[in-house]
Image 1 (spheres, rainbow, N blue to C red):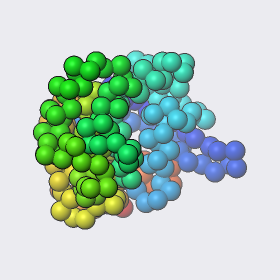
Image 2 (cartoon, helix red, strand yellow; image 1 turned 135 degrees about the vertical axis):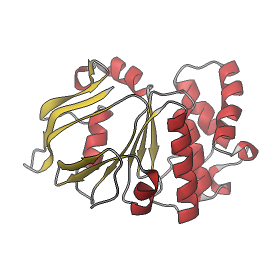
Image 3 (cartoon, one colour; image 1 turned 180 degrees about the vertical axis):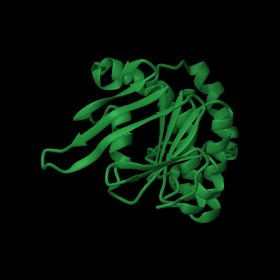
Image 4 (tube, rainbow, N blue to C red; image 1 turned 30 degrees about the vertical axis):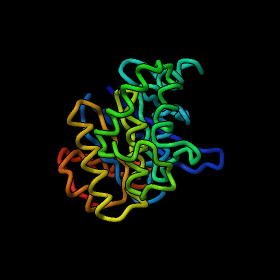
Length: 226
């Protein structure tokens, strides 16, 4: 499904962000990518989202070389990927419903689909009662659940969760992890980047460990070993 084939990224100042990265992710897999700040996790994610191009090597989604996609094709590809960030990135002047509906409108979904799917996805993240609230009326954990709902409402093939619990307390962190596991159980591939040792150790899923732009471990059922 996803393949990094001997990918390297060297920036103009000669700094090496990635060096000889090779790994694959199968459909419906849950993969955590860990490593200290500067290990290369963010560059790796940007590479998959076609925000960066490799200096060497290639990144594939199914049989498609992502870096060879044209602009229109990149937009179509990104609709197959849901993204969740540490800082939520909700629109502050829109309600929970409107934040999620906005993502559906951008994907060309109909009003009928929006009216049907938004309440359904909010049930999935246990926020049905907050549908008409604004982001400032929600806790950090609730805002992140809205962000997850927005990421999955268009039924992507892959969800990228980039440090999704970085701003949350342990209780909300656990809630977010359980939701990501539920999404994975429903058939969506999940790629998680995190510094949180407790999260990784509780998952019992595949862990890729990065250091200085290289993969130093790839464990099928790993622990946080950084």
